Length: 190
Image (cartoon, rainbow, N blue to C red; front, side):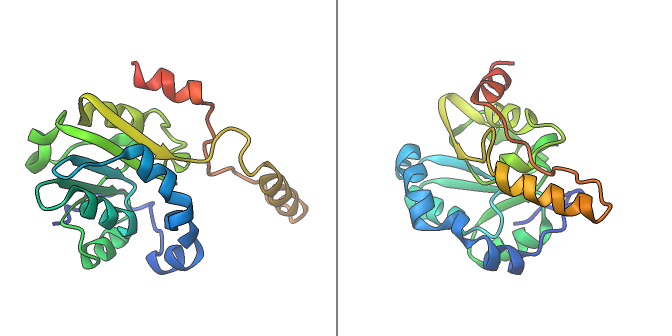
């Protein structure tokens, strides 16, 4: 089920994303995350920024029929592909302004884990929003496991890109948020 309520500014192309960023969900890149997450059959997990569902499918396999996997993404077209890929429970929401839909509200505070991969660095408008959402979704003792670009990531590429844009008379805007670990630690305790 897909519940529409995404903000229209999120216009990712599922085809372009899957063709150009398939490294994001490669086994080599994600195996350490899945080991850290250590999901068990029957557990409940949220995939924040599930996109087209490649990793969400793995989460469903790990939790089995007894488990629950909830996929959340800010882009309706990504969620449509996720649904076609077999993701059972989805909804559309900007993680920075997270609101649990009424039909899932009873699940708040009941999840064993929140998982996110290559998503949080896009949450520049309110970087603490997704962390606060995760804390509200987790039951006491739950796990929040994720991967994101951190402080100083891609510095050379970002610098070169900025120089090219400036030479063309364009003032660059950085679309990413690259935090220090302490930035998220603060958000998880507020």
